[in-house]
Length: 246
Image (tube, rainbow, N blue to C red):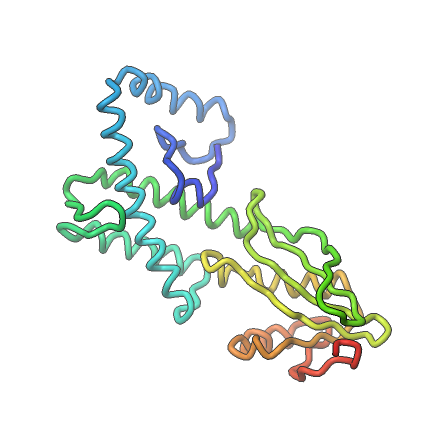
């Protein structure tokens, strides 16, 4: 059973936590079955207390994750470096005597199941890695946007049924120009190569166009400059495509 990142960090945890993906589903089922049978015999009050304890551990792992995400604007960490920074944040939190967790108040680290914390970290970091590696662009679809004399389209980048990014752009085939209006990647998946994948899709779906970007991408100019060096399509730093874009 492979869980998504959102399921592991934001939704109630499955109990027990599924083992790492194995070749045969029967083998994974055999590993979790004894734990499930033992849980079924626990009194209701003890089950509630167990859920609360597991929810606190989940909040701690999530806190370490969110701290790592918050650093991405300046750190620009690729996947492996992101995972290491997340691991370091978690280790730092577990090394404290106590921590104030949102929604859980003051938590004493010694009272937590640190083994579950690291198991959850491994499962969640693997889920993030798998989601980025398995991300694929959806089909482009026409959208109505203003009264421009060009075709406006958009597509999403998805993984496991979850949208990780969105792209909106316009094309004018008669003038052989394209304009990238918007590219947005979920903060949790930035610097995982999804931006390059999106630009590559624009080129593959609409070859022989000269591509422009809007002024909103000035902060990402370095990214576009590097991409242009290896792109089969021309990308220009100018911001005035053909007159049909208005």
